[in-house]
Length: 176
Length: 237
Image 1 (cartoon, rainbow over the protein chains, first blue to last red):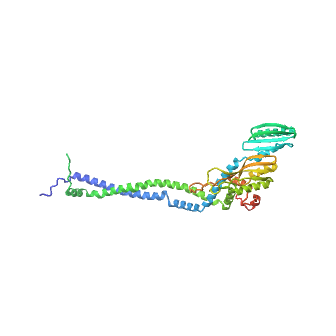
Image 2: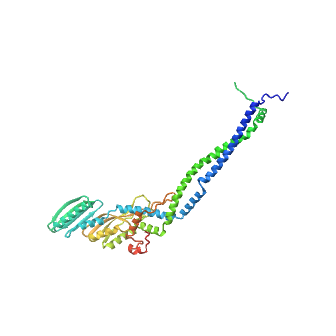
Image 3: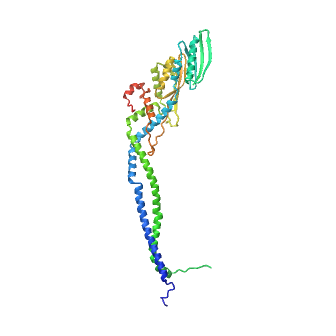
């Protein structure tokens, strides 16, 4: 049998194409290697550049420093919280003593407080005197307080007189 | 009709001989492709995440620096003093000794005589929990004295610790009744978060603390007034 007979023998043109193809594959392989190498180096370089170790070190140093001041931080947080609460409380309180003082300022001589009841919304006041003049003067004073917006509504509930004691008695209601 | 391909060892040898020069470059391309997909692409993606982390950390470092500067600038003694005064002003629990001291102080200061009062304290065994609202001890006091004395008593209570609020006043001829709420509030839990900026006490808060130093209070259970204690007190302001 003749072994030299080969029906798949390569033609010259096919050889050229194969050479070209081989060259292309080799170039692609080398390019791939270079690309992988460049991208690896770039990734490594950018990794260090984007998030430098110095940044991490500084952050860790600051965190360590702050951990020693947690006690102070807690105190500051409590003081701030407490001040907020205290301010809220003080601001919402009604100073009744000021209000009572204002009432007494308007009270002329010769008038006596029988009863004074104050709560968050109303003031009930009963005063007595042996003359109507100081009572009138007192009511004028209260009207003035209304003009000063210290009280909103002033009602004269009753005006009575007692023959036995010879006094006039006035009951007033004022809204705060 | 089914097509059949017969591959035998001779054909494989022939194909190997014909294309063996292609094998190594093809393997290299394949390996490079695998490396690119499995390692380098995720690495590059991670760089974006890292960039975001770096930005966040940079911002965090600014916050941390500010926090450190602020906390370093604070004095422990000043903070302790402020903490002490705000704790007395608004106790964390039912401070019934403070309440009795406040009434006693206000009465002695004004000349009014507190004839009777009843304090319903309630459960002391349970630890107070922060509900966000103020809790209070309510009591009704019978005060003997002139109208002026009662008014002075109310005024003294207004500037005495623990903080209280007079809710109603009934001034009679000889005996007056004063309803008071003494407030307390449990502390909220303090959570450390290093990334949160710490704010200093605002000027309005410092002013408020300064005002509190003018209030009447006792550091101990004795009925010593603030004037005698303030000499030993460090005012941080």
